[in-house]
Length: 315
Ligand SMILES: Nc1ncnc2c1ncn2[C@@H]1O[C@H](COP(=O)(O)OP(=O)(O)OP(=O)(O)O)[C@@H](O)[C@H]1O
Image (tube, rainbow, N blue to C red):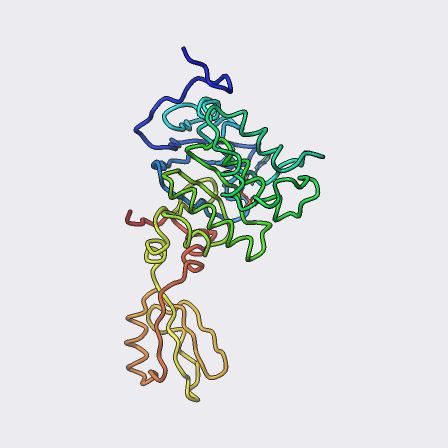
C-alpha cells in the first residue's frame, strides 16, 4: 500500500455527508454539553453554528475533530471516525485558543504544519488565501491578535483539507480584518470545500453561511437559511405615529407582545402583524404605519430563550 508523505493512509473517496452527528452526547459531570446532537453537513456547504455562551458549540466542534469522544451516539467525518479523517489530512481547524510558538516566522510555522499533511497546498497560496503574504517573514510571537488569527486561518488551510472547522474565527478581528477574513473564507469555500464555523455574530452567519444551525443546550433547535429562521420565528414589528394618542390599551391589541414608545412613535412587537394592523386601523391609528418582519436577532432570541421550543424550519 502506498504511504503518503505524512505516513497516513491515502484518502478514500466518500459520497455521503462530510459531517454526520447521530444522537451524539457529551457530558462534563452534571452538564450535558452536547445532548443528543443529530446533524448532517453535505460536501461543499458553508454552515454556521450559532448559539449562546455555553450552548455547546465548542464541545460539538471538539467531538467533530476527535479531541473528545462522545459518551453516546456517533460522529463521522467523510464516513469514518474523526481520528481517521484527521490522519488522512481531510480536516483543518482553527480553534479559539492556540499556543504561540516563540521565535519562528509565519512562513516557518505554516510550512511546518503543511508538511504534516499528505497533500498540502502550496505555501504561498495558503498565505495568500489567509491574507498574510506580507507577514510571511515576521515572527509569530510579535504579531497582533488579529494578525495571529489570520495565521491560524493559514494553518487551518495549509493541508488543503476538504473540511475546515473554525471556532469563532472573527472574535478578535476589527471590521477591516473581519471583512478580509470573510473574503478569504469565501474563496476557499468556492473551491468546493466544506466550511463549518461557530459564531456569535448573527449578521455574519446570515451573510456568509449557506445554512445556519442554531444550537441550544446541546441540541439543534433550528436549521435553515437566515430567511427561513426569520420566517420560522414569525411575527414582526409594527410602528406608527401616536399623534398625541394615549398608549393605554395598545398592549391588549391582537398579537401584541410588547410596546415601546420613542418620542411620538409607538413600536409594537407582535406575533401576528396582520391582526395588529387591522386592529390599529379600526382605531384610526395608521399615521406613518410601518410593518417590518422579525429580524434574525428576534428569531435567535425566540429560538434560544429559556422557554423556547424547537421550531420547524422548512429546509
Ligand atoms: N472541559 C469542560 N469541563 C467542564 N465543563 C465543560 C467543559 N467544556 C465545556 N463545559 C461546559 O459545557 C457547556 C457547553 O460549553 P461549550 O464551550 O461547548 O459552549 P459554547 O457554545 O462553545 O460557549 P461559548 O460561546 O461561551 O464559547 C458549558 O456549560 C460549559 O461550561
